[in-house]
Length: 173
Image 1 (cartoon, rainbow, N blue to C red):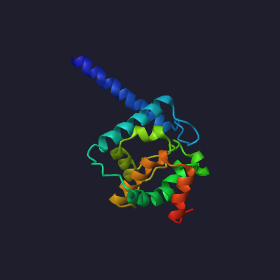
Image 2: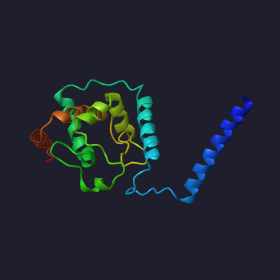
Image 3: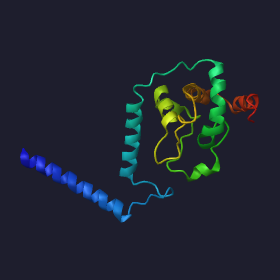
Image 4: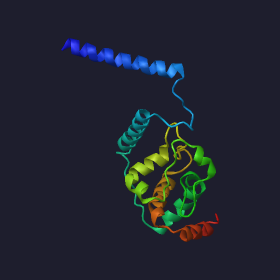
């Protein structure tokens, strides 16, 4: 049993040395226009999904119904989120083509179904390291963050003309 444990430690140590050599050599390209290796992409995606799932467990979702919460969430989404994630009838802005990983298109029903309200809230509040997704918890109140979640849940059902009408009502057309 001791030799099995020692072998395991040696393998772990060799793996750490190989990883350190890779990093210090500069062989791993960190450029945003060079995709991750498949193994790296898998590791990063798994880490992100597990982290969001684990850290959002204690978040108690707030009620997201009513027009007033949508009206409160719209300006925040329109002025910040829409730039990278698009909106009904609106593509993300040109600069997002150079982001890696690419921001998800939020009006998509598939994206909406992947995350719980608590997970979406946690992501908006805390952002993601080493991506273009900032933490909006430092600039928005809890009520604003939940209003953004509520508005994002409504996105897949909004037509481009409905979205434009909301922008006009908010004076943001």
